Amino acid sequence: MEKNHSEQTYPSDLVTRCLNLQRQLRDHVLATIRQSSLEELSGVASETEGDTIFRLDRLSEPLLISLLKEHFGGKYSFVLICEGLTDKAERVFPETQNPTAAQLRIIIDPIDGTRGLMYDKRSAWILMGVAPNLGEHTTLQDVEIAVQTEIPTSKGLYSDSLWAIKGQSTMGERQNLLTGECHQLCPRPSKATSLRYGFATIAKFFPGGTDLLARISEELVAELLGPLEQHKAHVFEDQYISTGGQFYELIMGHDRLIADLRSCLDSWLIAHGRPLPLCCHPYDLCTMLIAKQAGVIVTDATGNPLNAPLNTTENLSWIAYANDKLREVVEPVLLRLLRKHKLI
Image (cartoon, rainbow, N blue to C red; front, top):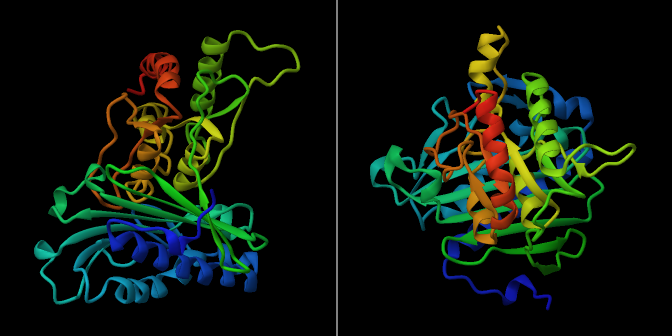
């Protein structure tokens, strides 16, 4: 049964604060997209250690700081971890607060999927993870509340939000951007136990090792499903350049397997005299809790629980399966192929 947001109750007001902040930020970014040219949005604003910052990213940053003060100021003290805001990508609120005494650490990716959104091709996502402040030792596994909200393209009428509190079921809403009306979303990861006729993707968004990743993808499908048939397509790929978007596709039952193995390529690329690729970072994965609480299995490249400090620079690889039974079928083959190609 569909339910309006006003009827929902939560054990923590942090979810509501995160949702309200994200929706205001989404509306600002969406209005900017509708009023700006592709050239304006896709220009490079700066280069950081973790990634390229585009003009679209810069447009959201002043408002983000204002919204953080509005929705969290006076109620919570926290250390903000967010690329592009400071040289160290960390900032404490309020400014007079001793960082070690702050209550929370909040890690944010204001626009996850900038490249697709700045060309008005595909939705991006606002990602937030909230963890108790354990200092520099705070990790992705410490995140207790995660919220992500869709920023649709300029012609989008609806925007989805998903959230999770550790130990509780993942929840979600779809909002009509014209009327403001919200209806409940029901996350349902796929129950399929085979990749056949489903979406299964090894991420290869950018040049740099895509030849090896494609080879592994071909070998994986061949071992799991047998030889390809003439003029048949038994497995499909979706190269969605947004980690939050990839999690969304798994959570909603659209995808069965996604593996982002870019950080595993370093030794192979160095041996071949090739530059290292842009990789996934902890801020891209800060809403992993939402996928896990929905039933998606998320591991590192060796099959262990994925974890990393909450920062903006660590290079990470990850694998996600829609369910346990699918993992049982796919993981042994995939990990054996990764060992064969000396990526793990």
